[in-house]
Length: 512
Image (cartoon, rainbow, N blue to C red; front, side, top):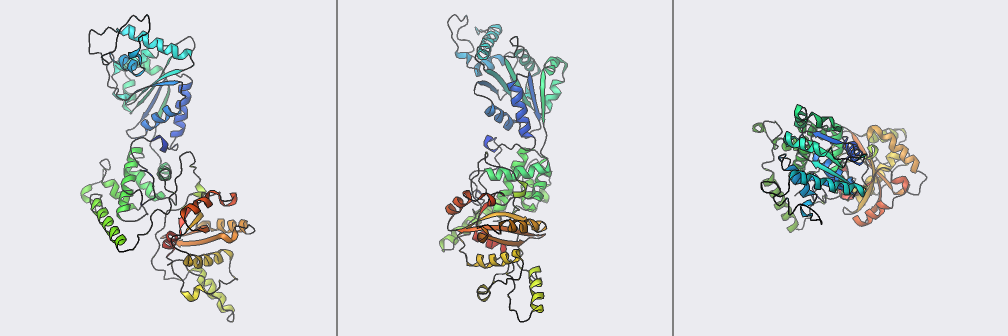
């Protein structure tokens, strides 16, 4: 519903595991590497434990995708299987129920997969023999067999012991079968049972998936947005990420649920800024939140009604010929493989511009002082962000006796007013006012470059601070801007530049 509004190609926060959206932060990437190493080196039984919704299934899928093709995987999603039937299930997954080689003493065995047929011709010993023969054949060709057991905490103790007996199958030098147990913390409690202490002793690697930290949540949210097709300033700020972390306890599934509902709530408000009220609306609408829903002043229940109104109003605008403002100004699909995290390149969330600026800016004060020193010199105040120039000011020249940064800002304001709303530009980077020295250094480095004349700088004032954005060039449409983005010189391509529309920048700055 909100995909087009945020410029997304697909839902960013589905709770179904999607390997293309795997986030290697929060130690998940390290866990995957450890699992690969353990499997490829035949390191006994491996255990992965994590709370509900911590990402165990995603890790299981990623491990499967990252193992070589010569490794055969038996995937057991439903572990509630009796000890008498576990061998039948494994044989079925290995395709041995269709095995009718010459000289085979058994006949159509395993017809009844769960072994309810007491007259089944396949005895346990014969079944085990078939599995062992398959494992030896696989080993002879350099392959392996690995069993993945999800929700292993639900597996009966007797079945776990049967699994342990399978792990005894080996040659003089190698194990024939690898076993990876994925389970909730209750699995550790089960493994403490004296009945299966031998299995516990065979566990060579034990991984514990911890919840995400506050920093991990912020990176994860914006990573997912980027992979889903969003290309622009971070939608989830550190503040909103901390709120999501607080109510999700750092668990991935909860993070996804809250983030998804937060985007829906922001869409209902027709804003691209995810605020605390949107997060709280999502939290109060979630069963796990623990927040008293009776005290809720902003929940998602009326969201559908609000969205319906938005759609109707948009249709009216379209009918009378007023085209709604484009909401996909930051679209550009970025694949997971090409995504890179660069703290210096992360752009701030789209700011909320103050509607009126009643105080003189620093630039105005400096200009007024210079006017007093030289009354005969006619100069024009530098255009102030958020205050559009009138036609007379547009026709005047920007004074030369100011800093390069101030001059660029003034030139950019005039430039923005003259540009068509539907044209595009490239935002090279965005910097907070406290780091303004980096912009000055950037301009100095580009001063002697042929690209300097194409550089523009604008500033916007948020509730807490001022932000400066560096722009490059003007392009008649998105395709041309995208081509220019891909062909940027190295000196301009170091800070993950993004596509912007002139209309979007004018809205931020208050320029008409």
